[in-house]
Length: 144
Image (tube, rainbow, N blue to C red; front, side):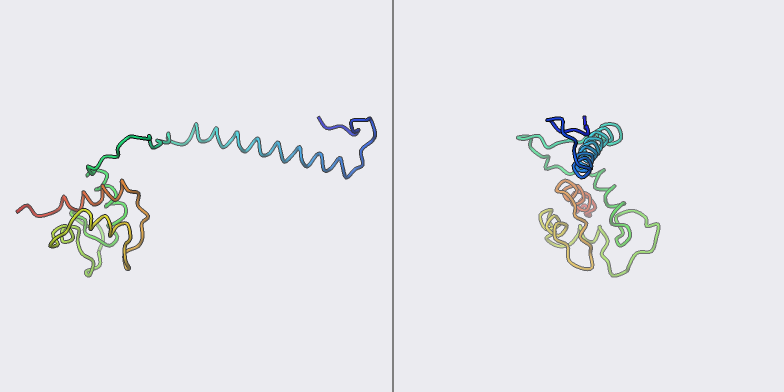
């Protein structure tokens, strides 16, 4: 509680009162923002899945997720193995042609997606997104 007197009962100067009020308001605002932020995360945001120490990450790609990523991120430039709903540049390789390149490997594709070169933008993909997108692209290989 803020009073106009200090601990010895002496009247505080106006500057001390304003300083005390400012500190009290700032503390209240910080507390309110922290509480509302935590509440918003609990109510609105989907649950955060934390990495579990010691739990091995799957090496197998999720082809459904890879397809979804390709549709979301790649269709503005590439044919991704399904019909295009917009024109694509003719000098950009299709995912099928990328998959069928001689000596194409998952490691090579993963490295490319980690550090793409112009004109391809850096999409800042996670390891799992790279794994899934690489798996999807390689799933388009012609069966020999």
